[in-house]
Image 1 (cartoon, rainbow, N blue to C red):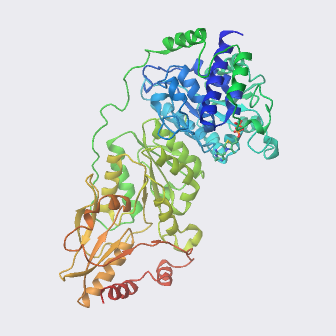
Image 2 (cartoon, rainbow, N blue to C red):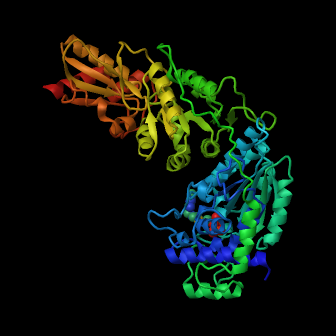
Image 3 (cartoon, rainbow, N blue to C red):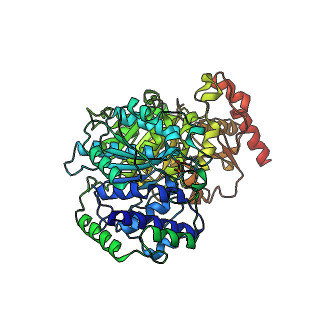
Length: 612
Ligand SMILES: Cc1ncc(C[n+]2csc(CCOP(=O)(O)OP(=O)(O)O)c2C)c(N)n1
């Protein structure tokens, strides 16, 4: 066997040995796709001595269950994964997670356990490259992505593929591990589609490699794909899941775990005899030469140099719809930093989340600052995660009630700690007459359940501008929920600190000594103030607090530690809290609120019951 074949076999061996050590993992893809990884990495422009170099080619493993394959490859290609670390695959507190998410230092650019999302993230990375390349001569790289049958069954890949074709992302190269087997059985059991025709119909360059088990055949296909100037490329490599074991080519091979003895036998047949985790001397030398040839080309250039400033956002303090307030705040952050860019799922004219002077991104206008994603919320959110991976500070928007369509991507933003800003308008009953399908009170709580995600619900334009300033200064995955309309606050309040990092909320006091506290978010602040006024007339004093971000409030209890209100009974007011257990209704918003008991009279009654 030649050295390249033995190099591929070494990847296979190290992959299977990790899985054996962990006694869990997916061996089928290791045996079936090691040659795809080898061919890809041989063609990829990266620098193992400077793994986060800006202009490196990116590799996304959308078939995230192939993590052992990725770690074995990255180890041999010079990333800082030590051989002993491979033994700790899937161990608690180890770096080598079962489905890795993000760790560019060890060559994990993005890897999605939830199948299909990696494909869409790769589209986002390729958009970022095209956009930056239009402004900076230093940016010129490819985005590679390995997908399996499962990734291409997922609808999100359809959504993103269509856009990639439309935007002519010619530097996106997808390698399809086409083995026609998934977990339950053959692909044909659940998928009768002609995938080649699908991609051609979406404007892709399709290269079919019938002998996908040959790294050279795949290498040739990648070289051809790189010369493609007008279309993204998918290389359909016909492979054999679990190649060279008895269950090869069947779904039994998907979650394959081999024992040490079986791996020893395979090592022999692969011409790389040796103990577990060993690499034959000449193969080691071969990889050392490759690593040397790839090392040293990186530099410290980045288009984001000097961008570490603090955002400043101001508002006039006017009564306005909060989606309009969000629009004004967004224009300010967009002016201050060109990392801010966004995407819309066909309703930016209604959510108002777009950059006015930015223009729509396209192949002919690659500097455009908004992506028109069409009615494809999930695809949009997953693509935007890709933009964030490339260093952008992206936002995207839809109605709050449709946030469910994006939830899997929001969850990955949170898990990967990406600075994505989700803007959801028409909160609460803002869509009153469109009926319950368009109303979103239950979504607020469900978004708050996602760990690491801050959910903001400001109550006026001043609070909206403060929330935007906080979000862009802190760079965390965030959701801003905005009302469709916005009543003027009937009285003025004092701004008080909610976090050390600049978040504030209102305190509305009366001249009377407070006997109870009302805490409200978003549009419910007006309701609380109406109740406060009614109670004042009856000589009952209350303090009303606005609570723009529950998560910041929980972390920093300074607000409820205000000495004068600390021991007072509290009523928390929010459409949807503590647990919303009904859908809305179709009708006028005031009528629906009355039906649900969201009236100042009801609150007055509640406060009286609390203090008496
Ligand atoms: C969204 C999502 N659904 C289900 C799974 C569970 N899962 C992991 S791999 C797999 C089968 C995928 O088949 P394929 O892409 O052909 O991978 P191969 O069998 O070739 O390794 C499934 C269903 C998942 N990881 N993500």
